[in-house]
Image 1 (cartoon, rainbow, N blue to C red):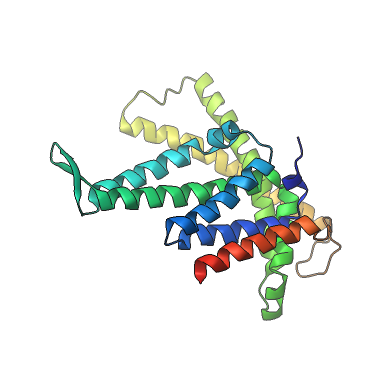
Image 2: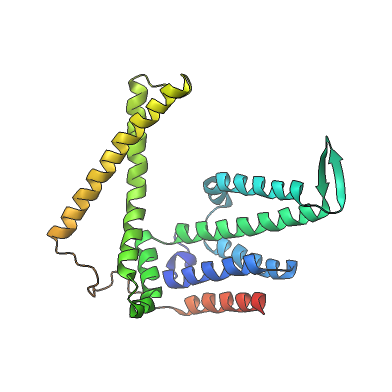
Length: 249
């Protein structure tokens, strides 16, 4: 179901994600962090996407964030809370780990919210328009955005080809869970070589197709997504600016 967040312009959403990420990282007090966290929570609710979907897509990254926070709990010195088997837990370590987990989780949720509510084409078009002023200093904005667009388009195809190669190896009797280290190394090479060959072949076909269609970098083109900023977009940018200024000042 398409929500209000899906209809917002990509430029306002990118601005909100960058501004709120800076806010939650720069927060030095729980009240400041709570303000940024509240805005993030509202954005997640407005997306009309279930929490289970967010967690299912981020569970591996959240586990890594929890492990990193646990290391903070164990290595930061301070007032001792509990000691078990020579491992000391401190109050300062608990605070540092909680801060780190909160910040990483907030940034991950913002990134997921942006990608879940914005089409890849709209995202790259919005990024191109935001970076357009850099063209005055001869920064290759169009080339950078084109590379990002192609990367987003090719990643699902690359994952699909990797699965096909893995299935073909399983049919031929390859067992990744058994065998010596040398044999597993051969399996890896047998997996990477065809994947690399298919990627290079697809890149060559794409380059040839762009050349046949007369593609030239740096030429001004009409925009596929020319949606103007609406009132809700300006409200989102204003709220982000207020939260960011409150953190920095």
